Length: 306
Image (cartoon, rainbow, N blue to C red):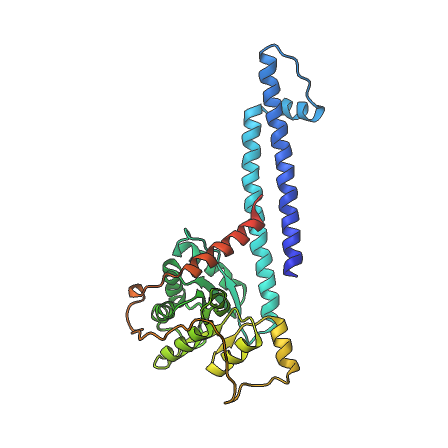
């Protein structure tokens, strides 16, 4: 469904872009023709261009088309948002007692207030939404305010213990189940670090907490990841269908005392962190968070460029 929708949106964008380009070209051709005529040169225009040129002053018409291009762009964005809301409502109906995460658009320049504006709109769509914010300074500002407004949040693109500590501090006062923390373990594995160590470290750090933040193990790449996440005590796990299918075919086997998660990747050591400080005092920067935001915004922008 998502791939089909993306194809439809991309086709619509391509058609709209072609349509506007051709009309703008026609108007500009008319403008150039007029300049040639003023110089005494002869230049015959196609009938359609002559007609457009007759009814609209050349420069005003070009400006008019550019204005409509912006309007079409705004309508396209509105359509995408409405479509996303429809998808969210359908998924919500499938799991009324569960949760549907809806991610705000955020690039490196997006401010907290802009994220909050989106979050407030998204939260109207369904009653069981968790709004996804990036674990950045602006994302944490937005999450802090969102929790105070009664929203549920999912802090995404987490790659370090300090980010996890900051999320805990920024969302204090939330009820258990209102805050998800999503460490992306597969992306740490991709660069040679043992991603499951981060899950173990965060769960260990949270043992003395009030429990309002739930650990959602994300970017699971293998059945070994999946079983280790269960063994460690992850509150939630997101996994591809193939892994869930393999697990089901194994009889939903649970890891026992003999289960041993092994990998040759570089261990991630545990840090002694005081997570009772204000969230602004933690070092939350991580290059994988930056790369994740860049990739997300690039993918989103590729859908709506006209």
